[in-house]
Image (cartoon, rainbow, N blue to C red; front, top):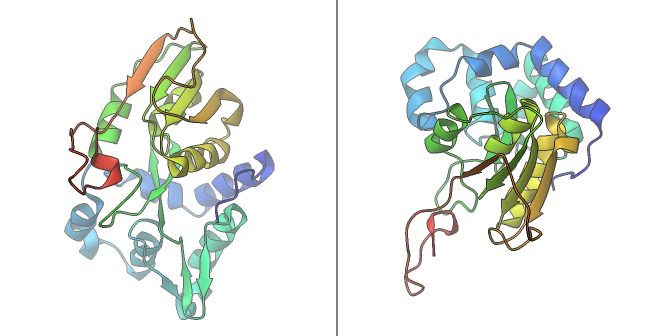
Length: 230
């Protein structure tokens, strides 16, 4: 279960703790524009055991065993994320329950862990678009097909007021959580809707961004939700 309202103090404390633990610096050293499994596979031998555990827990959707939860850095990492109600504890250990936590341009982002049959998309093209955003400080932006909100959050952290729209309720839920986590809840309005349906007539924006599914899939063909462009 994902907690929709976590409070500014909790979010600030969590981010501060991730900074203190060195998790922020470590995540900033990773390239999320590449397939994370391939990228980590190429660098795996460069990491020590603790950073293997961090990657498994935060990025690869794997469970940390109880014996490893006693490692001071891992214990503090889990404690920092506990208030978000995303950690699933089992008799054998703890995991993020199907989520991963990534970071780009100072933005923390809970996303769905890569797996067959995903319902929420985040990939290299998401990062590619985020790198090319042109900010209008204090302006208004519309983020269509927002997913977990990487575009909306980059824009909001740059000072823009953002309307975020996705047809997937899970995407909207994660986008709201991520806006709170990054301290920009007041700058991001999140809606679950089919493109423009929820917008008032006559509205205008300084910037509109979209990263939609592009494949036109016939209704008779079974295809993952995140790739079906209709």
